[in-house]
Length: 290
Image 1: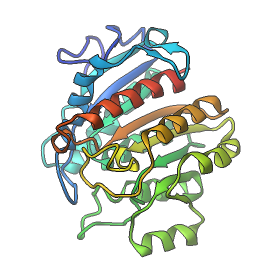
Image 2 (image 1 turned 120 degrees about the horizontal axis):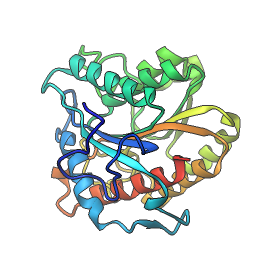
Image 3 (image 1 turned 180 degrees about the vertical axis):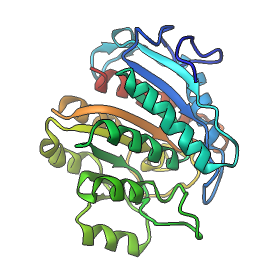
Image 4 (image 1 turned 90 degrees about the vertical axis):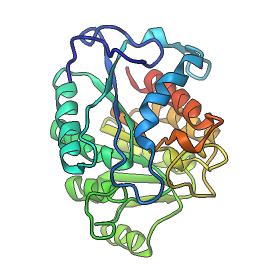
């Protein structure tokens, strides 16, 4: 992936034409090779870009305008269809390059497995990294149907890499009994059902630390985000998720990168999921890129 020219296709609204002059880099990870239910999230990044044209460029929540943050849309990482390991390697290599240029990486998935190589790259640069994970699912399996490379395994892999005490999950309402037992045994923090209130309690303990935030769109209730591969009833509202993004922005944690994954446009003809995702990305840019 080249950084010296703008992506030739659709770009996220107000994308800056220069990589070098930008503080942040938006990139897509169009992979859904390992999903356990409904595929289609590889089309998420492209549709989020397309609907971003309907966004207001001003955030009334943060009193900031997209012109206040220079970001470069690098397009989608070219990934080999059906090859999870090579795709993971390509994503890690790409993010290594973004971090080497001292840019803030903001990724769009794609299935949640794509967060694993990004976390690996982030951890190489920030050995005291903490991860904030918002999701309906634990994603703590060691494997799915015998396959360790699965969208149900990235948070388990992050725990094994960084130590489970450095990974914080919020909004969780689905998973195997064994996953919850493992988390309890190793001392991993899991907030069931809610995000905002437990997040308020945890953020002061992360003051000054580099933090990577990964958001699976299915943390939202299907009423707010039906366009995803594994919908799960009982989720939070889009209002709570926006408030959680703003709570992080107001805190003293040092957000060093983030992603938003699992948007699958084909299951939402109303496009409310993609439109919600584009607004969330606007708030992540304006709130977390300093």
